[in-house]
Each structure stands twice: as C-alpha cells, then as structure tokens.
Length: 95
Image (tube, rainbow, N blue to C red):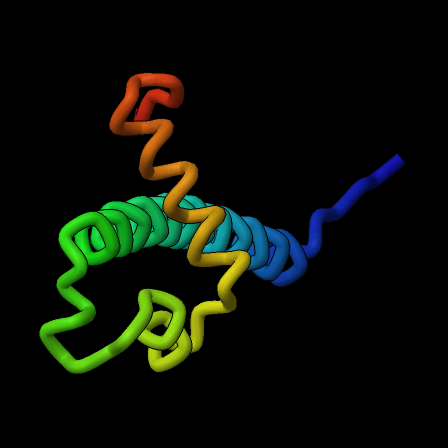
C-alpha cells in the first residue's frame, strides 16, 4: 500500500487552524474588553447619579440623561444595581 499526502491540503488545513486560533484569541480579547467597558460604564453611571452630575447639563432627571446615551431605563438601573453590589462587596470584580 502506497500512501501519498497532499501537501497542499495540509497547508490549507494548517492555515485554517491558524486562522481559527487567531479568531478565538481575538474573541477572548474582545469579550474581556467588553466586560471591562461595561463595568466602567456601570461605575460612571453610578457616580453621575449619586452626585447628580446630570443636573450640570440641565437634565431634570437621571432617566432623561440616560436617554441621550441610548440606555434603556431598565438597563441603566440594572447597571446601577451591579455597581452598588460591587461597591458593597457583594460582587467581586475579577479578571
């Protein structure tokens, strides 16, 4: 029995595997970056609400402020609950 390997296919398979590993690596980086960004957004929203900084721009309410940033009221308040839980030590911020 004489078996011959097609080097071209192996190269293509290797290229596919290299590309796949590169994509997974980038996905991991993007997910971590997105998580960091959301956590930072939560902290920012909490500070703005707690100190009523939104009034400095003439907003009458925190909800009016969040609308300009395309944040739904429920999303903004979910973020605030998480930020409060982090501040109180109920949730740990680990990466």
